[in-house]
Image 1 (cartoon, one colour):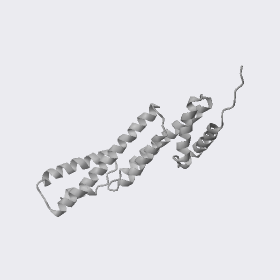
Image 2 (tube, helix red, strand yellow):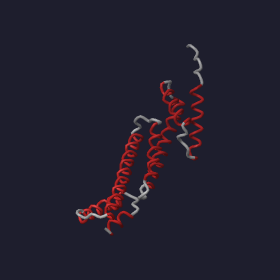
Image 3 (cartoon, rainbow, N blue to C red):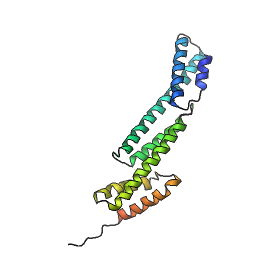
Image 4 (cartoon, rainbow, N blue to C red):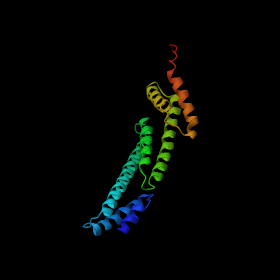
Length: 179
């Protein structure tokens, strides 16, 4: 039980430490399988909670990887990806038994920068784009600006571009002369 207590008191901060704790606790469970006491039940409850935190971390890391692949392949560059990142970041607050929230937040920040740059490139390309992209751009601008999805201070210039693009997109098209 002392070894199980030590495992529960670990503050895992990466996948290797997580795997080591899972393996170590599996070894403890083999020894403690037929034992039963109030203290052991409490240890098992704590382990169940910690294991759920491990599963949450793994699920969110997989989700981040999926978003990263989408952004990398430039598939469906969608403003909802930013909201998904925010949702993943909020789940970090549930990770209290380990230090796994830190690497998850770091991965979120890195992906957010990549995503912001992708949106920036998309907005830059609007200068030369046709009308069909205007609807997409208008949706991006509305979601990003009006929902304050880029709260970071380093994205101030990007926010200004969004505001400018929003103003341009709301301006009715100028009639073109006939040739």
